[in-house]
Length: 329
Image (cartoon, rainbow, N blue to C red):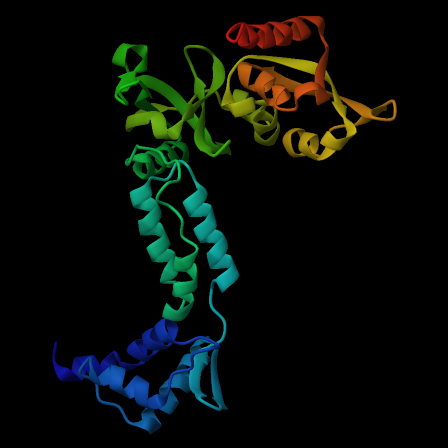
């Protein structure tokens, strides 16, 4: 590129240098900016730097000039993402089980570029990824993209679905045959990402773990099941489906000790009605998908939680507890 062409990029390099190297605690001087431009074969004088900074301010960049003690020069005062917001993004990425170790580190590096190099060091110090439980499916990002393509284009998708055996090998369900469904939404539950779709063969809404899907292809066939999906309240669906296990939906009557109010509201939602039952307990009626995960949630509270109706669910809960106890007899 001819030297004159480099000169045309001068204001862009100034913006880049300010964004990368300056913050409230680290102002950059005019001399530093000139030196940076020189390293890119761009000549500049102080007077032109001043006018370029004014132009960047007019463009909308929040550039502050300071002259206090050893901290003098210019810095970017506000950015699209403030440091606490970037820390929140880093925390979310590193704690997400469906994101692989490799992709986690890659995403965090990209997030760090949204801050100055000085703030990026603070983000780097809070990264603890190595021993976290993560998915082994590196293609999950392409899976998500392809599912959204099916949703946005109103088309069915097909895919393979697998589980892992004890040798950590993929074992394909349906004998290795493709699933064909109509995708409608993505949802997050218990640290996993799920696709909610209509299964035409079964005539019902089902969900699938995205990290256990493979070879996703958008088909030419239009989706069906729109009426079934529109009748579904996704917030309610996620609330009553424990661990995204399928099963029979039942209105159950539960009894808890008072100290579990917070845990019940977190799981069942703040709209659930709490009915006092004596001085130390309360009861609730709620719709749930009865499954081993639902029983496991109640078992986590030991004797502080109890199913009191209907009778068939009480019986299933008793059988669930007995089957576990039988292993230790």
